[in-house]
Length: 455
Image 1 (cartoon, rainbow, N blue to C red):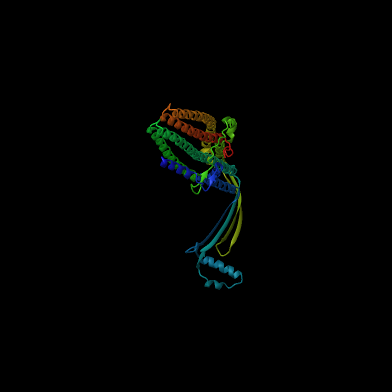
Image 2 (image 1 turned 135 degrees about the horizontal axis):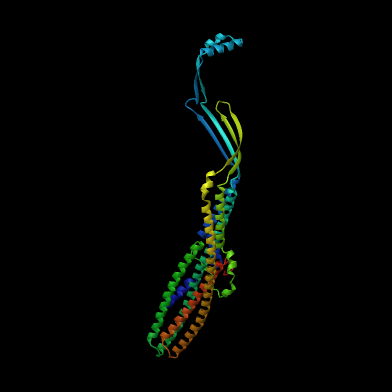
């Protein structure tokens, strides 16, 4: 008997040793929002979307290209053999004589020679084109990029809501385990008192040894349950620590199970009005908007593109560099796109599908809100029933103990009453935990912040 009490006391002491840090629910939320991998990934997605937005703005600026070429051939690019006929020589001689020169000098010149030109050279060009009109694609593309950034921001909010909901579930589950440990401690004290009564009755000769052994078996069960709970607390701590990014599981939480449980009607709101606050609803609207922009982009592909610009050109082919500047104006008309339709009809159908999905999901979101409120109501009623059950089970335990002490009832009935009293307290703990989780679920379902609901 003493050995069992020592085990129970050791478990109680081990669980009540001060931990290095004690976290509140608010602190756990803040740590999860800072350290959770899903949230960090979502923030990086926003940065990526902003970079894409900056890239889209660059389309408003001129397109500038530069190029340079140097070549050196194994032979001349232009090479030709020229022969001078006798008739041409006579004509040249006449010209030389008319100039007052000695025509006999012509005889020393060759009658044929080779012309060779351009064996190596350099070419450099710089071209700038400024789009003037592109069917609205640049403007629409920038709007679409900005919209994608807004979508990523909404997706971050959605991820944060999921993280807040999950961390609260983990926190409440750990809180529930601690509260059940308190219940076991109270049960062990009750059994110690009952064991004392049974031992006294046995010593007085008004009860048999079986009553004492029955109580001790029940105490053994409590000891086993305490071990299981201790293991459950350790595992749940590890789960919570991993989710919030705590360095280790050597921490404690605020173990006070709240008794402030307002009726669900306190949080009731108009679901139709709350729809605009739902991140999911906003994402559905953004999807419709994005699909309509895609239609404009497809239509812009069927319109002319106009640009103006200039080309600067430098070349050196004959050891004489030349620089030229040429103004440009280009018009591109996608004639074949007019009859191929370039996917405009298909994109319009995609936009129509997005609108239908949004309208359908609107009804589903409203159903989800009502279902969350109904679950909240049920959880609240379960708390009230559990409170009444505790009152009834405590009274039942008191009566059975009095009956046992008066010799009117057996030990099995008394222990059954004690078990029911313990179960009633566990049911209240579970009901309060469920209430807290359902409250958070309802607040999130109606697009509200849960930070102030339960610190």
